[in-house]
Image (tube, rainbow, N blue to C red; front, side, top):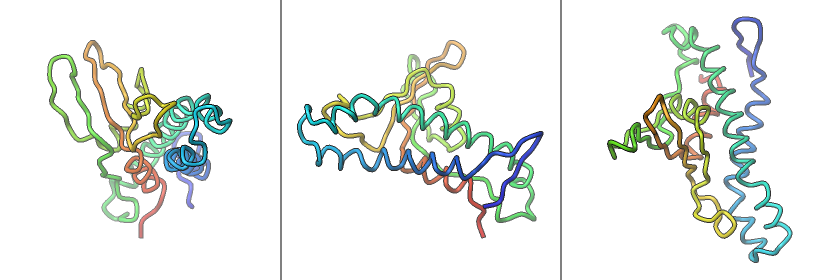
Length: 172
């Protein structure tokens, strides 16, 4: 994997990809964990319940920051039509309500918007009802505000992981 940097540093993309992989494992393995530990008092479930929400938030914030830095570092190459293997990632990663108090209107959440919303979220909540009783669905709810306007987004984890992988890979 080629490294690209701007200013005075290069982002270690292999570390970012590893964190993206970990996010996918936490998401994809959660249902299996409930199969292996069906009762709430099982030590595996107790461990999961102690760390689950924090791990999801930690991995989302870390991968969003890495994605944004890489997007910035690659912006000149991706804007150059002579560099087709460095195309911009244009993938939808969920839905966004930009003003939840005054409008119920939803918009598609682009990959770049998803990174921004993760970074600026005040709440990152796995969408599974009571996380001690249900495995993670494919979405995480993000909430925050832009100025005085409250926003809400549903982030689709598999789509976010796909877009993140594409962000760090050169295309041929």
